[in-house]
Image (cartoon, rainbow, N blue to C red; front, side):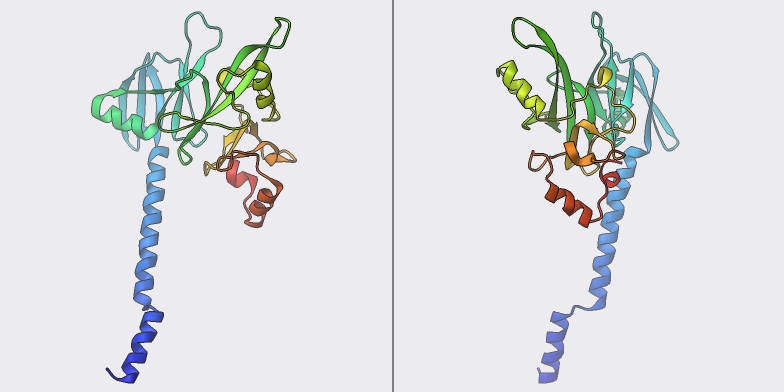
Length: 262
């Protein structure tokens, strides 16, 4: 091989042909389209309660009616619209329960194959506040009674963050440990800051608990219209409240509160 040909070969190795670059771009675009298409699939599915234990799912022009393994009163969508969270009223209890859930795509597939929908259930029997498909997590809250001394009882609100699938709890500083004293439990709960109790497990409109990317949580709720919206936001990675440095990093990347929790 001549010297000129050898130099030409080196240039080709160091600078790939435009055709390869175009093919790479097409591959990336195709992958992005597939991901967006998969994301839209669950958003296209809508649900409606049509009878006792009967759920009707609609996707495009197709509608399916299937039996759910729960006598439920109603349901609500998760913040990302990928899950249904069911409201159940048990006899003898004043407050309803939001302990059962199902992913919309799973419900549709089950309904189409067997005409029955199997719901998942929080193992601790706690109210589910929100679920996030990207982060594969959900947040629950429990309102119970605890001793504050001298035989006096008081209401305690505690939160738990669990992974999907399997519902294994992710332990945070505010998490309640088993067999710990009420005093220690309240100290942990107090670290959440801005404790809020959601009436019967329903999160008010405009309040968000899990970021869209599933990386941050706000157990007590976050509203981007407040002066310091990130004050009580926790990182799922570090399991700590996000620091001022992390907030500045988000600002430098032009990531707004609305981009995460809007």
